[in-house]
Image 1 (cartoon, helix red, strand yellow):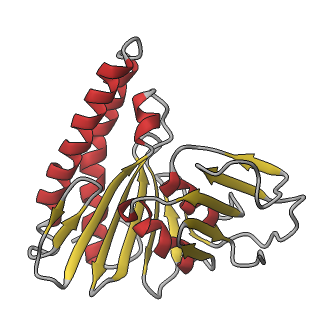
Image 2: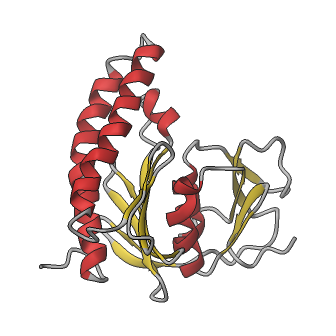
Image 3: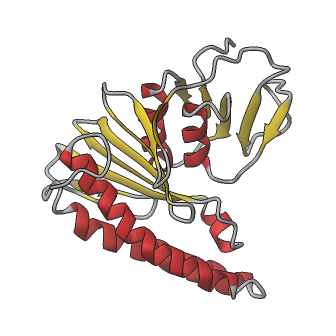
Length: 235
């Protein structure tokens, strides 16, 4: 097969599955924009779209690892006990309000270790990805590059994204709340944010971002809260 992005054939097959799913999501996004007078109707529509994503992408992923299990915020399917795809639509509440800040997070885990990770923004068609031990990268039709975390350590220069956290615990000069944790993690990996802090999240939403961030030089702690940094910030 012709490789679309730098990496293994499995990584590329997973990316092609994301691209096919994203085509339908972009159509759905246009429909949601027409439903803004009824948030209940928009929420129901997005819920159905998220379910369809799981169904569509599973059929494609079965060609990558036929016996792999599946973990999403709503579905757990047992596989061979060795491989598992972890999938989530991050930023669904943004999608409901026709806000383009949402992403598909997809990871392949083998023996409980994430080996391949992709975070894809369907609207601007921008991808962040990593394979274990090979670094982290970004890709779009116009640009492709290896990504690394920032070197900023001074709070007066820091930009920190928060999710469900009150106040500004890291005393950052610039605070953001985007509503899309998967993309926030990717942006820490790419040096666009210096840190991300969140209350507990479903593992499916952060599995891919965890690997991408670590491959870009960052650190992440997953406990009662999730704290992800560029790897240079202490405390």
